[in-house]
Length: 364
Image 1 (cartoon, rainbow, N blue to C red):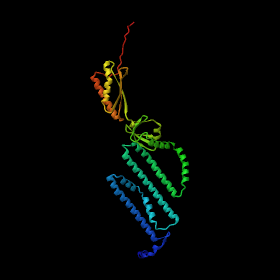
Image 2 (spheres, rainbow, N blue to C red; image 1 turned 90 degrees about the horizontal axis):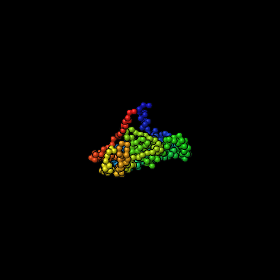
Image 3 (cartoon, one colour; image 1 turned 135 degrees about the horizontal axis):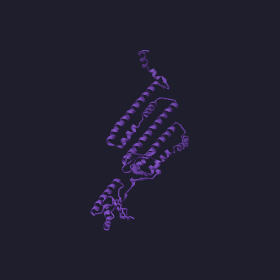
Image 4 (spheres, helix red, strand yellow; image 1 turned 135 degrees about the vertical axis):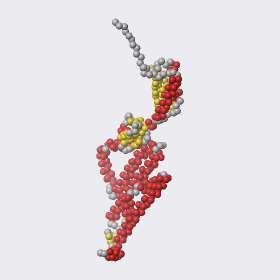
């Protein structure tokens, strides 16, 4: 067949009326054109929304704009393909099985896309919640961080069940079977499930939250992350300490962030030769040195006992701040003040000394 014969056959409109899988060729062409046009249009609209609204979100930091950009970015190419294919095929006539299969594929794609959108919304909500509440309400941030996982788990579990139900699967029997299998899995993964439920207990009970400075046994550090299985703590020396959640709940935790004030007890000794009159004035010197510092509350100062090589004094006061650096600055200022006042009063701090008495016996 030469080109002239092929063109004459193509120009003959009778071939458009031929039946192909129950539909005329002309309707197949219309369906293909509609599919291609819809797919191109949907992808174009998605890109325009992401660019235009994305630029607005960067300029204004508007939450709704960020949400729209996140939702547009979460649209999957296969979802646009399935939607365009289904809409383009509406003018075609298929059998009951083929029509049902197309509807099932479309509904499944829609349910999966809705799950991705819900996941994005949960992530955006958590991110904004952390940005606005971290400094003022870290406890609620810790709770929301933990609950967000269970929210995503619930979304995807519901999506899978709806997809199976749409496929005419007996969901109740499947759930019962999963329940029996879940018992076996739970027995085989007791430690993992123990850490999982421990993380839920940490999130709800809040023995510590993100940013708290805690001590676990001999380990100290700031809480950086509370996960499903482990909690990560940044130690004072810089390394990251990782604890299983169940181990944390079984041990004793000291939370220094929730300390309202710090009780300080310190002692020192002066020489045994110090006159009694000066010893009697020393508690007042200690008290005035402590009360001269801000954010302190004096408790007591006493001549405590007679030591092996010194007269021992003990003082107790409170620092009205849990910050360790503030405590050290105050203690340093108190020590310097005592050194100056004792030097003016000619009171000397004791050094470890021993007196050795030598008794010489006569030779026999």
